[in-house]
Length: 290
Image 1 (tube, rainbow, N blue to C red):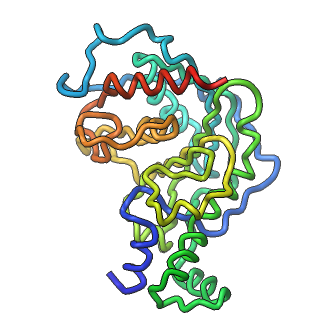
Image 2 (cartoon, rainbow, N blue to C red):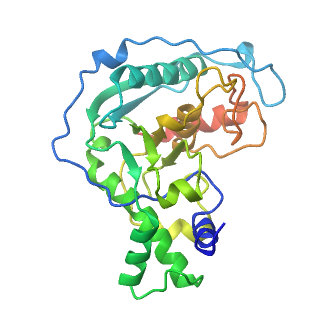
């Protein structure tokens, strides 16, 4: 890895997050009839074998124990509706037996297909414009790099802040072909980025302390970003749970080490579970929301 790459890796942290380049959103994003996305059905299998951290059906309470959560789907410019419908169906298929009902509030079409577009020359130019040396490893350069890469996430939240209007909890799900564009800094530093979650208060899942300031002024509804082109392909032996995992983060769940738990950072080869402590945390969080 180059010196610049090492500096960027340190600034970003070895976690599943990434910054964005210049983000352009178009006012009056066209809506998509919800009926076209609500019709899909999906069955998830196989389930992981019960073990430590798992709960069988006898330990689960009724499917209404966690109530319902409203979601808004934001589809990238070229994302097929059928693919979005399947992702929504998979999300429902996972959480419904575990007590959480997923309701589609509405869906919109974005004018972008990629989110993180800032390339190395653009980053160097931006740092130089601030009077900084793009090749230096100082604290000032690291802080500026973090802000340049992460602050557009706050811009996205602000541009879509109406997602939190109305009653009930709302989570925005952004489905893009790629979170990080081919040739972008994020693509090089964080290869294989599949998803990330913003909790609506400037915090990314697992954000290192050194980066927490970068989005301290961000506000808006919890928002998930999914990189569809980077998800595990059919037949790979990997059961894709990226969207469910990121929703877990948006609802306050942290990573765990148990390989067959939904919040494991490792790829799953079977349908993972939530343990009793996680379900209790979700139940308490949902009960505390208006």
